Image (cartoon, rainbow, N blue to C red):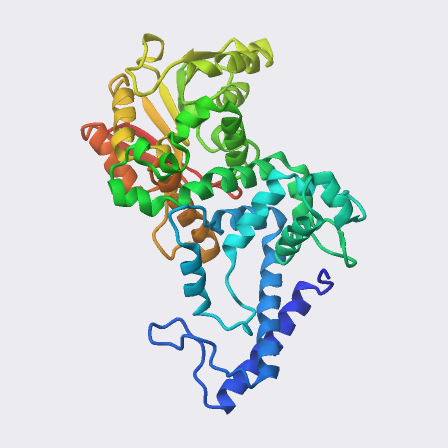
Length: 459
């Protein structure tokens, strides 16, 4: 059953139930729940007070429902997929873990934590395209859905019902499935589909090997020592070369965290007009060049060199040539590996762009990349880094900080790299540039974006 209550009505019901619980605790001289270190470890009401636990469970359901409504379908998927974890390692004694976990829970307590089962269910729903098989309007029976997806009726029902608790799908009548706003997104939005597929098929298996990787090579920063490599037998970017479809999917997944493809922020939030007429801009690791093309469309006196791996050249040239000639003639694709010295065509440019590049690499490799750039920059050149800047703990709302912290752990799992604080960025740039280059400008991310723009100039 989907909620028909307004936000205010739901909040009022939460307040009423919270007041009942507070009153009960007070009248029975029981300790109040808190987050202090020596606070109570369990909700302090015995199972003999069944009526109080009914209210407690109702309150838990209502607070989650209110949160999910306020978060909205798109962010629900993004936050959920970033924060659920999956047990996926043959090195674990599952029976021992199961017995150990059960020691913490009573079978009468419905509030058991099963995030790994949500991850597994989302993986199955993604892999078997369950959301795409549910009609946009109306409903479909579990039997029909099973035939459409190739799953058994038992399995499709268990996965749908597990995710429906989180408002992904709804069972309007027994044995039938219909869309919620969230499952409809999974059905129709390629970015959301790519995000769930990438996280469940690559990020989660890699995360399950974090401890193994740390035991073997703690702090090495080497891609071949990453948890991802342990999980798949090859490093993240090597796998992307071997299986280009996973790179395409990864690009779509990451674009789900930006408004559009990220062009708007890069075009509108940096003052490109401060560059001289005819200035050359080198877009390092620029993929097919969509960022450069977007800026070139607005600023008609700038020229761009897009650098990336050779296999992307055909696609990049196709994209560039699809633009009007007044834009396409000012954007050139140049095959290049940024771990190698910059080629002649990219030396002494007026500006260099690195968008979402350096967070893919540990400090060891990020330093190599930056040194190759600083070596060819003029004293009046500038480096424009668009990347995540981690805030100090407690600055952001916890719901936002949780996603950023999850990103940081995910970078370790997949790439043996990290997200960086502003102080870390300053240290990295100073070390790589021999103390001659400094961050001179900071543009915080606008609503809907997750990256900060750092301007680096000669000190």
